[in-house]
Amino acid sequence: MSEPPARTSQAAEVWRRLKRNRAALAGGAIVAVFVFTALFAPWIAPHAPDAGDLGRRLEPPSAEHWLGTDELGRDIFSRILHGARVSLQIQLVAVLIALVAGCLLGLLGGYYGGWADHGIMRAMDILLAFPGIFLAISIIAVLGPGLLNLMLAAGIYSIPQFARIVRGSILSLKEKEFVEAARAAGEGDASILFRHLLPNAMAPIIIQTTLRMATVLLTASGLSFLGLGVQPPHPEWGAMLSNARPYLITAPHVATFPGLAIMLVVMGFNLFGDGLRDSLDPRLKD
Amino acid sequence: MPLLSVRDLRTHFFSAGKVVRALDGVSFDIAEGEIFGIVGETGCGKSVTALSILRLIPFPPGKIVSGSIRFKGTELLELPPERMRSFRGKEISMIFQEPMTSLNPVFRVGDQMREVIALHQGLGREEAWKAAVAMLARVRIPEAEKIARCYPHQLSGGMRQRVMIAMELSCRPALLIADEPTTALDVTIQAQILELLRQMRRELGTAILLITHDLGVVAQMCDRVAVMYAGGIVEEAGVVGIFEAPRHPYTQGLWGAIPPAEEERETLAVIPGTVPDLSQPPAGCPFHPRCGRRFEPCDRERPAMRAVAPGHRVACHLYPEGGVPS
View 1 (cartoon, chains in turn purple, orange):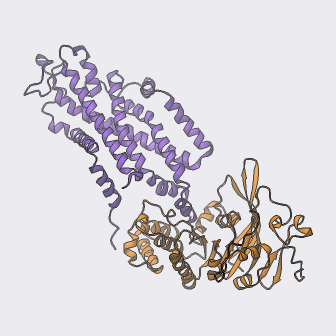
View 2: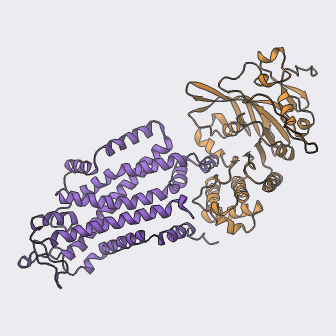
């Protein structure tokens, strides 16, 4: 007896709809290039990211330095490639923290209701009441700057979004008859939560994960720009922008390229997330 | 000893300072291998009875306030929650009205069945899968292996109800509760599903508690029938007895409301009035405000269930203890 084949029908359907959405495809392509770059930066970067040549500082783009050099004579292109690595790392860890914590809180609140729900959702409301960047700054003020704390801060401030989305889905899903049927078949709470409810709430979670990658990247860059995140000499796009400030007039390319990188990748994730939303939404089924 | 014995079951719902007496003293027995029907209007407590037996009444707002439910001699209302769970799906299972939504849309039907089988029978993945396919074949699903790999949305309503029946019977429960199992289906499919339930009873010896408002289904399927009204049973008898000689005015009214096939009528017969508000039930017999034959004790005293013929019991003052109908 062979195992049933992998679930293809639904995925194929989503892919079919996604394929027709050009903006989503473009976003997906940007995300793919970004992830590829992050994974293979050491092998594709023409120069070491922190090897500076002070005799060749602030050079404009040339055949040797495609995007020019920065204030310490380091190759900007190589630094951007390595920066992708740092950014992806921050995004993955922060979104994972938010995803796991948010889904758990949302599941518990939505499923059990009552005081658990009240407690969790009011705590989420408190987190939401602060502007994101302010909340992240407060967390870093407590924990101190650095890569790990940056991930934590960006993760914690994304928890409410996941908690609210999951809770909302669970509230409607738990009234479905298949949940009652599962209970009538003797399944326990854990099985109902993780086998029946969570998989049915997957679509909004996937969309939120993608969109959140963009927000986290922006926040992380912003915090690094303010000197609260990744510390020099690590190549991080926000920190690169920050270092380039004094040379905006004399050597604008030093700030322009990291800025463009941030913009492109954020846009890529947003377009891809929006496209996913359209293709995963069953109401748009044709 | 009956398979299931329900005594004086009271399930109330508490909301907004009101107490809704959804079940107010329900008693009945189901023998092994028997098909027992519960009929009644919407809101009379049929489904609450089913959920109470499985102890699936959502709390809050609902609560079983008193009574006894004995299954194979075990008092279900006193079981700790863990033990109760091991009864659900294994000893007593339930199929629901809406086959379109009672299967989880994100799993293949075989995987869902496998989960329940593995839970109760401790089988490995491969064996549970084989058992699921075998059970699908047993409920006359052609190409069971293929259907097991389908998602619920790829199946028709009748097919899904077959899958539900297969799933619920896969652990060979002694009692299957079927809550309006055919209401959502086409008439031709209804007949097939009912026939399937009868076959399963014959082959597996499963007793069935069939909840319905369709008197045709009752006549076709049941060995014994209870008629419920406003949270209580008003009449209980063998299917022949209750169709040939209904005693309670409510039962007579229900039977009278079946439009006869041979004559043409301008208007359909109805029972005047509506089902009472169960948070403020009328004093005495709950049916008395709608009853055409009410007399002096009806609005004061609640009638008890009394035998009027062998195996035929009625709760109505028209049939006093040991006497003949007045």
